[in-house]
Length: 200
Length: 420
Ligand SMILES: Nc1ncnc2c1ncn2[C@@H]1O[C@H](COP(=O)(O)OP(=O)(O)O)[C@@H](O)[C@H]1O
Ligand SMILES: [Mg+2]
Image: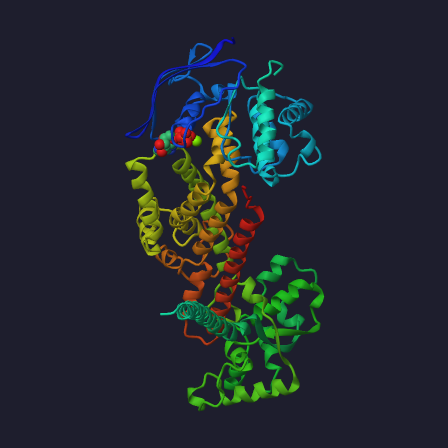
């Protein structure tokens, strides 16, 4: 049995007057893939967006209760969300690559966090991230082409590579395959299985 | 109603709609064509000026200048006698009245033209040279066919004697039409033949430059703050409504505001591009903020979320991702705002840009005119020569506007990135 990584206690989330999550108590373990399932609108997205505080972006969203990562409360006003999000990456339902080159899509995260000081270090991060996202072979010859020119499945793997690039401890994925065909889905599922391995 | 009848009705409705659409486009184009034709047919002749070939003799006795005189001495020197002597040789005049009539065929600046030719070639003392001396406004208009010569003499500005000379000049081919460089180079003048839009061009350029420098950064920063950082509440709603209202405020109100604050209170110099630029900036500000906010709004939220999710701060997500994507729309909005400012007349009239300014401004704090105000000034003038100049100035103004609007479209299409 692995250690508990994320612990949510009495988590309540409101969108204005409307309550979306009711007293969620949930422990998520390290080095595991945990899937949340439920009907549309039951609050899956709402829950995972609490873990990297993406709900801060939504004005009307109010979160109460506790979420701890490694025993540290993250639902704290004074917490630096930037470093939290560096540790907790996210992949969205709809692929959202930046309208920049494939290379810039991946190197952006490391750059703003001061990882990869030199060009060769960055090159290495980009290559490793794309390899882990099983996209390297398909794009290695066209890294300077726009990421938005890729197919839907490739775009989503690009977004996964982007999330991996800053070496997060946790990756949140919000229905990453809902817009993809079965073959692309299979690839990403395989990839998710790879990512939980301790070598990472 | 049978199925066929319904189908037929639907098709007919579609056809009718297409017809209405085409008809309205046709009417719109027709009016544009009439407008353009009207301006072109009146204005195109202003790009040419009439000149009369005169043999000028730089008589040493009349000049009182030595060989190797300095530039200053030449500028000081009196070329009046030489001018009169040279002009009188064009046609034999029998008495003083006829001499006056003959000299009236030439521009009042004939002496300056003769002096300039001498400045270009200082070895002309004691020599003869053929110069194209600009004709007076009346002869210019007559030669361009804009002046009716069949009026009775007492209602004509050109006497029978002058017509006689003109006909001889035409016969001898000493009267010619050349490119009118004065129109672009000179400032305003009471004499249409030497009046130009040089001053207005420079004035407009400075005004628009100042307008751009003031309005663009303020508008962009205001838009970014309002769109990306400001909390959405009653206050920001109120500000938004007011910006939209300001964009609709008649421009003359900004002129009154400038008159009160910039001229009366702060005492900035009247009639200057500086004041014009500030006034136009105030007016243009909301007109840039609106398209700028719209293009920021058009950037999909998923781009912001993508940046935030890899740990970018709010500031980084906005300035690294959102602003570059909104830039093409912002720039084209700015250019269109500036194009509107370029054609703006009313506020400039209020801040005194209607003053009659002959000199071309060398700095933004010199009194100056501007293109639309020049149009207004000349359209009020009685001289026939200003009619074509008015239309020609409108042509220049329209060409600038067209260039700016094309630039706006080009920038938008060239740099607009597509997402998904
Ligand atoms: N931005 C929002 N504003 C208001 N209500 C929202 C918002 N996002 C989600 N909700 C509501 O919260 C509930 C949970 O939504 P969500 O977490 O997206 O569900 P799921 O991801 O499981 O489909 C839904 O009832 C939805 O209507
Ligand atoms: Mg969802």
